Each structure stands twice: as C-alpha cells, then as structure tokens.
Image 1 (spheres, rainbow, N blue to C red):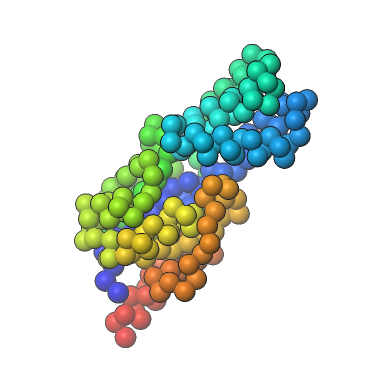
Image 2: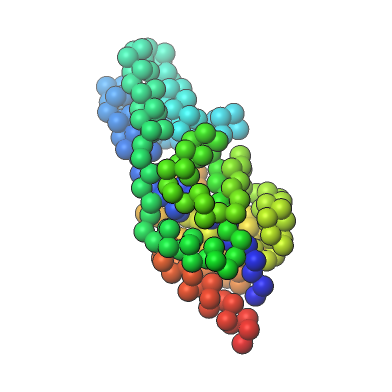
Length: 236
C-alpha cells in the first residue's frame, strides 16, 4: 500500500451538520401542521430538495428555498408571509450556528497530517463551508481545501492529482457512502466509511462490502490505527 494523500469530508465527518437540518425540519413541520401531516410534508420537502439540487446545490440556502417552495405547494399558494419570514430566519440561524466537532476529529487529522498530505474535500455553499472551517480550528492542519459542487470519480481524480500522487495512492474518509466512498473507489483510491447516526436520505447507498479498498471505522479515533495496519500489511 503506497498512500500519500488522505482526504477528509467535513459535514458529519469532522463536525455536526445533519442534526441542525433535522431540528429545522421539525420546526418546519410545526409551522405547517395546520396544512398537512409531518410525513407527507417530509416527502414533499425531500422531493423538492432532489429536484432543486441542480439549481441550488447543497447546503442551507438550497434547503431554505426548498422549504419555501414546499410550503407554497402544500398550502396551494396560501402560505402566510409570516411563515416565509420564519423560514428565512431559521435559515439564518443555521448559518450562524456554532461548530460542534465530532469525537476524535482533531486528534485524527493531527496524527495523519504528520505523515501524509491531508486535504479537506467538501460539498456545499462556499461561504458557509469556509465559515465552518474557520470556526472549527482545523484549517491550519490541511494542506489544501476543496469545496466542490459534486463528488464524482473525475473530481476525486483531479483533486488527488493536484494535491498528491493520484487517486490510486489516496484515501477518502467520510460519513457518506454515496459521496465519500463509492466515487473514490471508482477512481481507484481507498474509501473509509465513518458512519454517523444521522444521514440525509439523498446520501444513502449500499456499502461495497467486498471491495478490497473499502473499510469502515466506528469513529475517527480508529482511523490512524487503520492506516497503520494497512501500510504494515503491505510491507509484510
């Protein structure tokens, strides 16, 4: 195993993210409780998010616009202006929420940054992701930061060629099988899944259990040992 570069996802890998979306979604259901039941509202919102990804991308701003669109739909255009105002305020609250690092995030990045190129690779709104990275206190640990509109095999090949020696000698670590693991495996790299208790429905995918470059760790605290075992096994 020749490993030169390790990429880290940000949201729900290094710090909490989906939990704040779930809380906001619960508040959204309370606001629209007089118009539709929560399950139907959830399905309509998820459909709007899927439909709007190509227009708004990932992140809080697209989520808020999808909530507003869904509110208009389920009320047949009669949603009060005060509700629209509440939804926009909820979005501002999300954008201002303090960062909560996940367990072992700093220690794992610090340990691996002494031996490998470490790169932050994340999707989402540029300003919001830059804010979260700055507040996290982890920014100085990364040799590079890539904020992309989508994570695909070609995107990973480009990033790992730019910041390392190619995808074949790179590893991507993240909570999303769909975005952090499957595309980098397709690009020829290693994919490490770090499950999170909450995962957005549009990020669900089946684990490639029989792929020889796929691994899972329970949390980031186990990542340095996994890397050591893989490199030692190659030497043996």
